[in-house]
Length: 213
Picture (tube, rainbow, N blue to C red):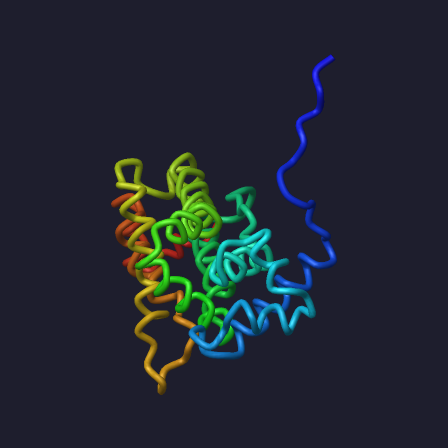
């Protein structure tokens, strides 16, 4: 009879894990990213620092897991009376809402900056945040193509990069006098002309109400 393999390390207490994640995200949303340390997270969570390093490799690792768990993006489907552009608008708004409020923007800027010097963190960012967002947008675009509302010949990865890139530029280069939440509608308006079949673009320009279901 084969023996059951034993897991390495002490199993995580969910109560302790939740306390650490909540403390890390609370600090990261309220204070400059550089001021948040593993020591401060441990103090706020009322745990020993070794409890953090037992399960995470760095403060960025903890903050990313906390942020990704709290801000999941749900898959939107183009069905019934909905239309592809309306669904795309909702998808981008969903991503924006989860990343550009004042606290979330502080977290995102810190993680994005640190990831430029940490290959493993960059991989985890892509796996835990960016890949689900790309999948969400790709699903909406594919559903729109199936309904004939989005061009069949678009370069989907490039279109998704342009949409997300517009959000990131506004996030990272936010001016103090500007609204911290990047407006989605101007990005959508530009993408409509690029994504829609030619006949629908002409109809939209003539004011035919093509965006209605």
